[in-house]
Image (cartoon, rainbow, N blue to C red):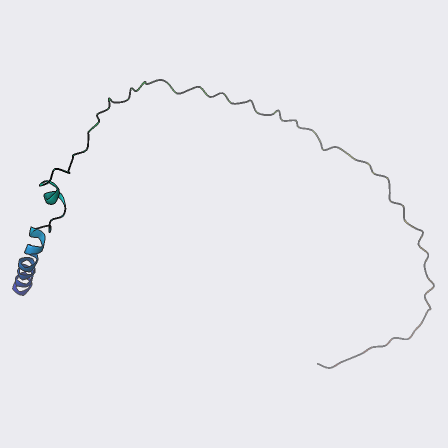
Length: 101
């Protein structure tokens, strides 16, 4: 702990000259010459605040709700071309393909 304290004190002793003078720049430099002019301070009166109740907001009434069954639409039955059954030959032959996996 003593070693850390000694190192910190030595660092501060070495850095002290750096912080002692600004090198001719900054506020100390500008105060010695006449070209430094402070800015004007403009004081404005505080804004007037009027307290009033909030404005009344009027909403539109909701749309009326109508409870009714859905409309029924009757469409005509579709007209298809007549279906003719093609003659199927009666065959008693059955072919089975058995592939072992």
